[in-house]
Image (cartoon, rainbow, N blue to C red; front, side, top):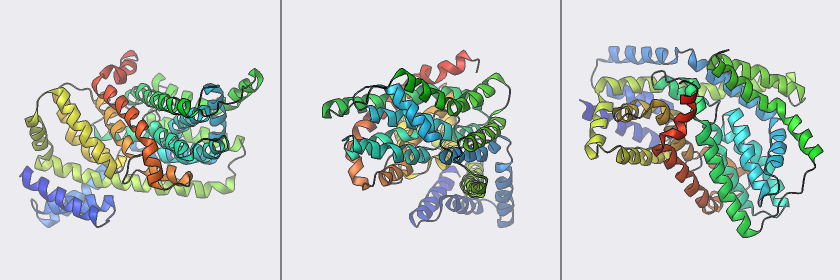
Length: 431
């Protein structure tokens, strides 16, 4: 039954995507068609409806709309400029200093907003013209911005990790948040090393020396924005509030910051809230639809059959991890990160659990793979936004991105094959 159901599910899903049916609708239709080959129509529709409701009936999922709203408030609330100024002080007078500022700005802003697209737009929109004025090649600047945009998907607070926690059967959100720090910082470091080498070879200018007084003022100006990380992550780790409660705290704090910076007025709130509702609706529809597909796969035994197939290729953990990495990298280039996590976690998690891989380690590896898809054609959203912000065609930025792709892939395989990188902080904190 698993083989026939898997073929029907895959073929119908693929056909619907090819004819440009929205992915959430494609998931529901493909799942229903598969169910109808097994159950009577009335029972199939009743079961699908039930799974939609139960799939959304989760307190943990409340964190997603709150973090989205917090991210949109930050995007409109003057946080980006202060983080960029702080990043400029941090990088000092290194060759290609503005490129390093862009990378650190994306790391800081992305981790606060949880969005690669927001980071590419907000930080790239400011840094691109500055780098052009200083004589940087616009293609290089765009590549730097795009390559570092997804770092915030790994460094907490990350909505993607919250969704992974839900679909993986309750992996600790706090543990996943803590586990994302080192891999995310390694990604940033790899981009900075690559940017440094290119900047050194092309003799890009260094920044002017900043006085101690200006550096101190810049740091003080950035403290309120940086405190969000301390409040949210510190509150979760200390047990003061849960990840869901932390998301509500993040909204309250970012709203306070936006009002303090006078970047958001009360009349702007309806539009900001509506934008958050639209983004949340898309994600929640995907979660609901994927709940049906997950049940169909479990009911028909597709995950077990696929697990047997993959393990049949090799039972060597090194080879299996390579296969999974390659598969997820390909999937990430064609599918958005949220549906990919929802669909493939129930399939691959039992496989890696079979050879002793921790769900926390696998979650970080999976999100890293799919985050790379955010900056990879044909459907990488951060790639398109980054190119658009730089006013360049897509083909103009692909070649400059290649050295960054290589550096990021090196980090991915280090994270995949060295569990310590993901697990050291959760283990130290007792997770």
